[in-house]
Length: 304
Ligand SMILES: NC(=O)c1ccc[n+]([C@@H]2O[C@H](COP(=O)([O-])OP(=O)(O)OC[C@H]3O[C@@H](n4cnc5c(N)ncnc54)[C@H](O)[C@@H]3O)[C@@H](O)[C@H]2O)c1
Image (cartoon, rainbow, N blue to C red):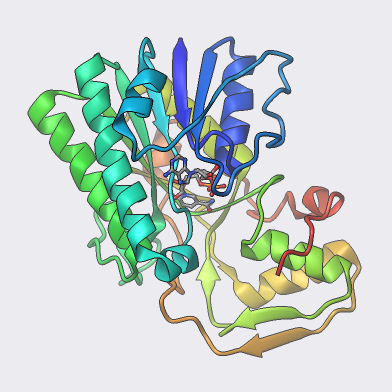
C-alpha cells in the first residue's frame, strides 16, 4: 500500500509512520512542521526512508501532489489541542475544518480508496453520562471540539454523497514517547526536575490511552475501514490527582502538587465506552497508566 500521513511528523503521526513502514507500506508525509519535527521519533525506525513533503493541508495543490498515487490517507494534521485552538481559533478552523475538507475533496478527485480521520473525544463536550458511547450527544464546548465535529460532518457527507470510504476514530487522551506540552509529558519533566506539578482544577477524570493501542486502531481502520465512528480509549477513568501521584511515584519525586483555577474550556470528565473498539479486537491496557514508568525513564524536556 502507498499511504499519505498528514501530520506525520507529529506525536501520533510519527509512531504511525514507523508502524506502516514496518508493515512494508510506502509512506509519504505531509506536514507543515508547525508542531512536528523532521526528526520525530521512530520515523526511520524501520530503516526505510519516508518521502517527506514540507507543506500545508490548507494548500490544495500541495495536498493533491502529496496524495497522488496513494491508496490511503491517514489525516492527522491539525491544530491538535484545546488551548492552542482557543489561542488561535482561525488557525484551528482553517486547518481542522478547511484542511479536512481539502483532504476529502482531494481523495474523491484522485480516487483514494480510504481516508482515516482522527477525531477527538472533545466532540462530545462535557459528558452527560459515563462511560461515553458513540451515540452520546455531540456537544463540543470549545473551538477545537467544534472543528473536529465539523470535520466529522464533512467526512459523513463525503461518504454519503460521493461514496468515499472514511473511517472516523475518536481518540481519548493519548500518551507515549515523543509527545510534549500535554499533561503527562509536562508533569514527568517537571517532577524529574523537582518542580511543582500544577493542576488546573483537580476534579477532572480523564481517559488516558497508550500510543500503541491508538496506532493499532489506526492501522486496523486503514486496513478494514470502520462502519461508524469509534472511540479509542482505555475505558477507565483516571482522576487527575491520581495521575499526579502516579507521576511522583514513577519519578521518585518529592515535588509539590499545586492546585490552581480550573480551565473551563476543557472537558473535565470523560471515560470512553470502548465496547465498539473491543468488538473490533482492539484491547486497551487494564491499567491505562501501565506505561508511565517506561516513559519516565526518558523524561520529556520541561517546556512550560
Ligand atoms: N494526542 C491526543 O491526545 C489526541 C487526542 C484526540 C485527537 N487527536 C488528534 O490526533 C491527531 C494527531 O495528534 P498529535 O497528538 O499527534 O498532534 P501533533 O500536534 O503532535 O501532530 C499534528 C501534526 O500536524 C501538523 N500540522 C498542523 N497544522 C498543519 C497544517 N495546516 N498542514 C500540515 N500539517 C499541519 C503539525 O506540525 C504536527 O506535526 C490530530 O488530528 C489531533 O487533533 C490527538
